[in-house]
Image (cartoon, rainbow, N blue to C red; front, top):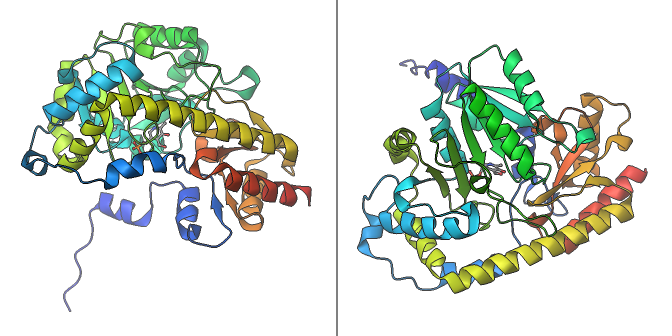
Length: 405
Ligand SMILES: Cc1ncc(COP(=O)(O)O)c(C=O)c1O
């Protein structure tokens, strides 16, 4: 028998270890089980009735949609995206030629960091953070995340002092700062002065700034989101803006992320890699026709935001009734629970035990704070938009029962 040729070293590494966090693997293992409620993945399932008629109606797809086109996205689609996002997301006029679309925010980030940093370089990521950045940044780009810890005691505020401290201790050359605003997992909208301070600091040390604004429209009420391009100069070429259809348009499976940057070199490098993760022509055609229907878009955004707010209100009321503390959120599809009082001791081991109990006994999957690289054990993220409010409230009831025992 001929020997099976081995995988490459990198292939071996990928085959033996998934870059996905463990709680996601656990979710997909249980997703079809009766009685299980997955509240660990950030998706908006509250607006399917608005999307469904558009997705399932007869569509007049032109032949151009099924052939090769501009790798950065068809001009038609980028024009629709630029017009929509200028008005609703970026808060300033951006031309279609400054826009690149790829298969999701994850693809945009992975490709963008490939273009602005070399293997072995470091990226500053404020924590707590979206758990997927480690896969996006470290797996194939071979970069290192250097965490910039922020703390619940200070409302997770990002300061130049904290950025400088992380920069100073990085053993690797720091090439960029990645800011997610609104933040995942805290649901906080950074203040204008925080954004100003962080960008001014990054500019003072001469690194790229990546502004991840994928939750720009998913606001919950009182605090409005101010696009960072209105707070700092967006045209210097050192700042790059990321948005996607996954969260604000509740279409995580459609795979469409959007990059805009004034930096021609960055756009060219990302476009030259786009072939391997582009958005299908059919998807571009569908999303473009959706965006061009401005009446529908206005209805969609208003309805989506009011449903999100209603769900957040029902969720937080249930948490309060259950005696579970949380960090009030301004935006996002989730709320960060402060479950420190339910830990047997303030350790990561005890946090894992608590997660196991909630998962096994209450049949609820929450995102553990450790996956978000939070600075202290006992926090868990609950994604409230992933199911109708009554299901989320029932899940909180089961968590309450388990915690009482
Ligand atoms: C902050 C943040 N960035 C990026 C992503 C990835 O988005 P996409 O599904 O568009 O790749 C997510 C998904 O949860 C996210 O929360």
